[in-house]
Structure formats: structure tokens, C-alpha cells
Amino acid sequence: MARITLRQLLDHAAEHGYGVPAFNINNMEQGLAIMDAAAAVDAPVIIQASRGARSYANDIMLSKMIDALDEMYPQIPLCMHQDHGNEEATCATAIKHGFTSVMMDGSLKADAKTAAEYEYNVDITRRVVEMAHWIGASVEGELGVLGSLERGGGEQEDGHGVEGKVSHDQLLTDPDQAVDFVRATKVDALAIAMGTSHGAYKFSRKPDGDILAMKVVEEIHRRLPNTHLVMHGSSSVPQVLQDEFNRFGGEMPQTWGVPVEEIVRGIRHGVRKVNIDTDCRLAMTAAFRKVASQTKSEFDPRKFLKPAMEAMRDLCRERFVQFGTAGHAGDIRVMPLSEMARRYRSGALDPRIGNIASAAE
Image 1 (cartoon, one colour):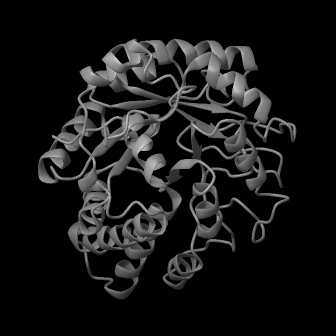
Image 2 (image 1 turned 90 degrees about the vertical axis):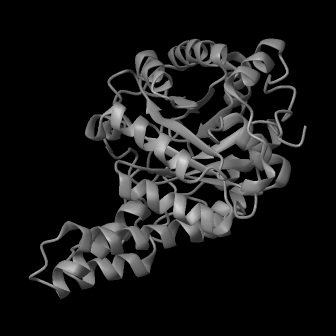
């Protein structure tokens, strides 16, 4: 198997100057689409599942499906990541079921909708890091509240997202606090708040520096050059997919996502993981609508799912190329969890030291 930890993959990405898209899944078709795309361009993969996805598909089904993808694509390093873990138990059970990486999102309390105090975030994230590193798994933390700078709040997705209005300061990660947070928690990656949000309706216009604060990314990277940064809510919501969705009966209002060129800018400044879900959903559901509209007598689900898989595959392949991920799968020698655990215990993977878990070692 080629199951890889997030830390090792992102260390390799940092060494070679690329980013890795992290695609959410709920079912087999999405998993196959991602892996087909990765195999086509020789890209390593981050597949992530939210708590909603785990509830929908069941942990056992997800675990066995990832095992099958490992077996089908042994040449592709695959990180299985828990997206937006809300408490220790969520992260512990993910690791139990074969996830090699977890996100402890302590920016919100365990209800996943109430903004948490900084001290709470540090405490719970540190505890999850200690637990995960003991067996070699990686941890992503989050600092700042994910949400729109235009609306002053977030969007609920799969039961996760701040409710109500929050301050402008809470929606932007403080660079000084980021330095303290990474040192206090020893997270392997840091998700930062800079104006992106979940869902399709991120911006009411093409984003500029007032509503997409890429300068925050750049400043945090300047202060933490060896810390892997993560951009959440980074679907681009392509106009062509919006048009296709609406052409075949959808009613999606005009919206703007995160431009690919801004993501590439982030990759040049330390962003190594880029979360993408809405784009994949939109690609698939636009294909569903097209089949339903053009072949109204069709009732075989496979006739809907096959073109939907192809649409998602094409979207994923495009992102692998755009983010520079393509061409790197074969370069990585995957380390087992036991070796990663040994390195954590020795202090070799302290984020303040640098990126030394590279496959080039």
C-alpha cells in the first residue's frame, strides 16, 4: 500500500515547490474519479472526509473503500485525512479506521458552530497532536474563523461552520498568534482564515484584496517559512460549471469562487494543501442534470454516475496540473507510521526545525 501521512507529503511538496489539492469524498465514484485523475498525471493524493461524510458512508465502508483504492493504485501515495474534526474522539476514531492525518478544528467549539477562545483552541489541538504523533499520524490545526469578509460570517457545510456574525479580526488569522500557536501545539499544518468560506457562494464579485486577504498568507509564511499552510474553502466555482448546471435546469445564482491564480500565488507563499469540494460536487451534479434533461427515459443510475465521474476526474486532473502536483507521485518513498512516530519522538519533525521528513532523505 502507498498510504502516506500528510506531514511527509507536505514536506515533499514544500521541498519541490508545489501544492496538493485535498478533495472531499462520500462515495466510491468520487474516490475513483480522484485516483484516475492522479494516475493519469502521476500525482500524490489527499482524500478527505468530513464528519458528515463519515456519517453518510459509515466509517467501515470508507475505510474499506480507501483500502481498495490503495490496492488499485499502488503507485499513488495516498493521504486519508479527517476534515474539520470537532473534538478528540472524532480524531481518535478516524485514526482507528486508517486515516493517516486528522484536522482538529479548535477554532470552533465541539458543537462546530460556536467560535472558540484562543486558549481552548491551543489546548485541544495540542492534546490531539500528542495523541496522533504517538502513532505517527499528522495533525492540521486551524487558527481564525473560516468565513466571508463580505458577510461577516460563515456557511454551514456538513454540520460545520460558525453561526451568526463574527468580528472582522476573527475572520483573519493574526500572524503573531500563528507563530505562538504553531510553537505551542506542534501542528504539522496550519489552516488560516483569510476570507474564504465553504460552499459555492463565497464572493458576490471577483475577489480582490479587500475580501480575499492573500497578504495574510504571505505575512504568515514570512514569519513561519517552515510551516505548511492550508487554504480551506478554495473551490474556484468555474463559470463553465455554473453555466452547465443552469443550462440543464439548475438555478444557481451568479457567484465567484477563489481564482486559481490566487491559489497559485498562495502556493508560492507556503500554501501546501488546498481544500476543494464544491467544484467536485458541481461538476458531478451538472453531469447528472445533463443526463436527466437529455435522456428523460433513463433510469439506470450508472448512466448518470459514469459521466459524473468523468466530469469530476477532469476537474481533479486540471487542479493537479495547475497546482504543480502532477509528476511527483513516483518521487516519493512512503514512510510507515512507525517511522514517522520515531521521528516525532526524536524531535526531528518539530515544525520549528524545518521540513526534514522529505522522501529525498
